[in-house]
Amino acid sequence: MTANNTITNIKRQLIRAFATLDGWFDREDEFHDYKSIDGQQVREVFAGILEISHSLMLVIDNAGNHARRLVVDNDLDNKISDYSLDEKIFEEERVNRFLKEISVHRKNEMFHRSLPEIRSELRDQLDRCLCHIELLANSEGVLHNVKLKHTEIDVYHCIHLLSLQLWKYIQGLTSLELEFNTRG
Image 1 (tube, rainbow, N blue to C red):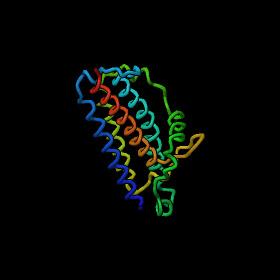
Image 2: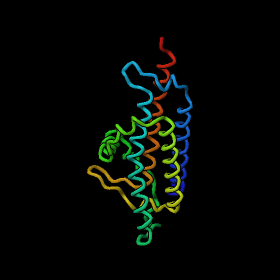
Image 3: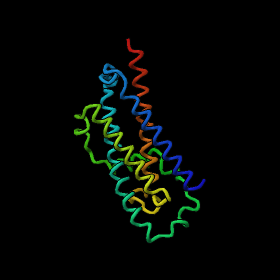
Image 4: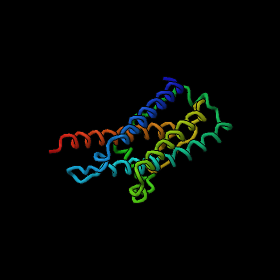
């Protein structure tokens, strides 16, 4: 697969994930206020989404800016000739370590936001990701890797990781909805 195809797929997956997540904000208040059998409230799930996505956006913003500055000094064609996503990066253990390293632990702040505020910030994050993809449309995102203790990850992997995390939370919301709809 070419770098352009990979980037196009990342963009499509990102848009689908954010659009699907956005639909969950339209559910009735009774669902948003629902507390599951294990004590998890739906509103807390939205706050958790915002915490993870906020942390990833800090990395994406930083890495995207670095990649754009590096394009002048690099032979981009050699780096993108056979570019594709490294699926090993998305293994659960590696993802958990990565997310733990970048987490800014703003959970308390996130829990005090209203659903419209959370929705608005998530929409802003989608817009920022799409801007990064557009500004890095010539595959410049491969030029800068975020270096952490356990892995290195480029801008496109960060954006794809964000969409994967959104889908993970969407699955959790789906489970909560099923429990909500079958409660006695």
